[in-house]
Length: 120
Image (cartoon, rainbow, N blue to C red):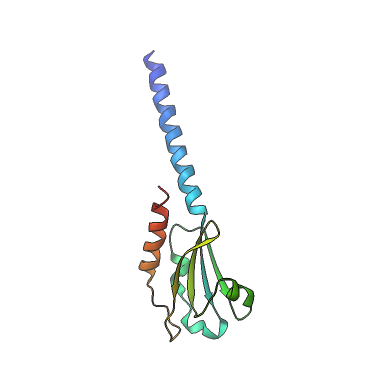
């Protein structure tokens, strides 16, 4: 009887761990970060975007060659960083008038963390 109870506890803990892993991986898989910029503004490219944590998808869109993306996402100034969740824009960070990103890596990461925490 005691052996059955121990086995049940181990199985329950295992299932709980698997459950939390599935929830966490599902939340992370839904996050996408895209940097919109243009080749002529490469000096102001935001190099730290690829270092952001808890996102599985990162992309770079050159609006000089992909004008449809510029129109679709209403990019007015570059660089612009947009965070998408489930394909919908949930946060946007834009450069100032000198085409330099105003937001810091920490501010963008904090926003990603807040979005993920709102799922729980």
